[in-house]
Amino acid sequence: MTDHAASATTDRTTVEPFAFDPENDVHARALSRLASERIAWLGTIGRNGYPHAVPVWFLWHDGAVIIMSEPTSAKVRNATRDGRVLVHLESGHDEEQLTVLQGTAEVLGEAATSWLPTIGDAYLAKYEHDLPPLKLTLESMAAKYSTIIRVTPEKLIAW
Image (cartoon, rainbow, N blue to C red; front, top):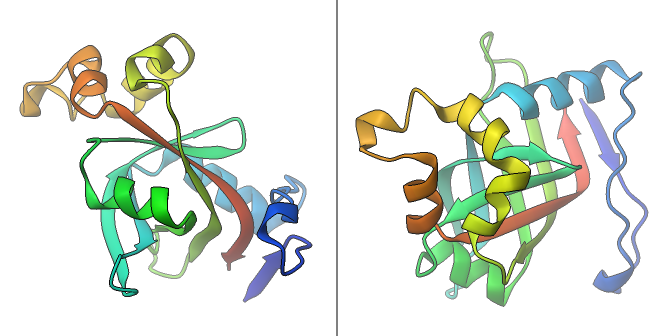
């Protein structure tokens, strides 16, 4: 197992984003999975102090995990209150590929629809077959799941 941590102090404001090294096999595999996996589990800290984990659609974009969410969801409330989160991918086709990002979530103020010029094509390419059965278009998805959660990784736990 490899546990790659960014340098950090006890002051959370000084934590540096994790830097992936594409030459490192574990990092390269994690980057590939972040680009291709359709479902991740987002772990937040509930108001009762217990973990809260939910499956989410996501997009790996500019070194961060981008999640569209309904604004009244528990994950949005939790991430707003405490930005410490985990993004955990499934174990892979052979059940031996652990990929977990520990990071900081930021609930963004701009609506998901304003992100469509930036991420719309990539999001649609990833989820185009999933939207029609839900009677959603990219635009209606962004309108319904109008809050953006951006997770900046601080640590990669992977093997």
